[in-house]
Image (cartoon, rainbow, N blue to C red; front, side, top):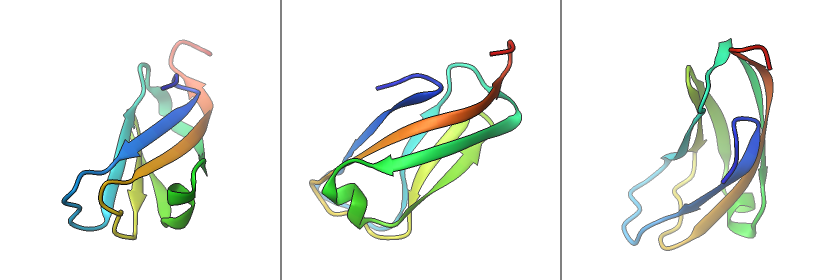
Length: 90
């Protein structure tokens, strides 16, 4: 739920979680020029607060990656804000 500049990511894990890694991948509708953008990520529920995550930028968006194993059948919620310059000048 969101746009290229702000939104909410909700990850619901399945019953068979195998380990750490990518929790979510967000793809922008319009790429930021030169990959020049910053991501502010905020956990918005207790599960998201309890797991160690970091942002990995891609040419077309970003990934939320965990160093910890996610819990099975759980919901992780994050809000994000993107700051940067997009192609097209806005």
